[in-house]
Length: 133
Image 1: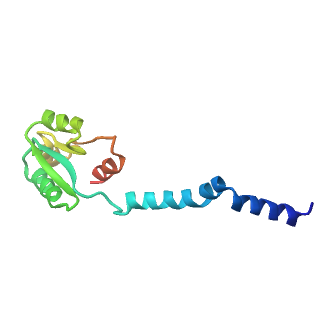
Image 2: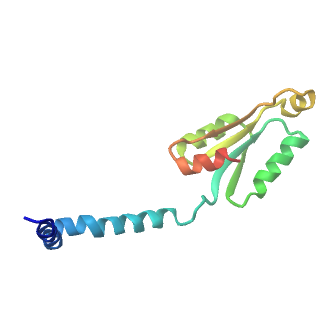
Image 3: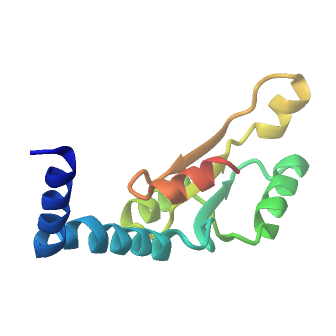
């Protein structure tokens, strides 16, 4: 048997077997369309994050104001860290930002202030977006 004969036989087999035809053409097209439908926005919108500002200084208020003006975030302000953690565990929030009590005073002294950004790792795209803030 020549190469041409084997090639024609395999092509005929390929075109007559429905399972091979479906798995070779229809499933890849369906998979591409399905993934496109999921990721067509390109970025996450209206991510619910919590903000806990225990410092209340000028710098932390300015950062909170910048977070409030971000168009892709839907912020909720909390007075206690435990409330934000509770809502994060319930899935109400995708993450929260916590400013420690001495944030601005450490910043003025040249020390590294504590800003805690916590996300819910179950939602990978949302977590990555929150961590990029």
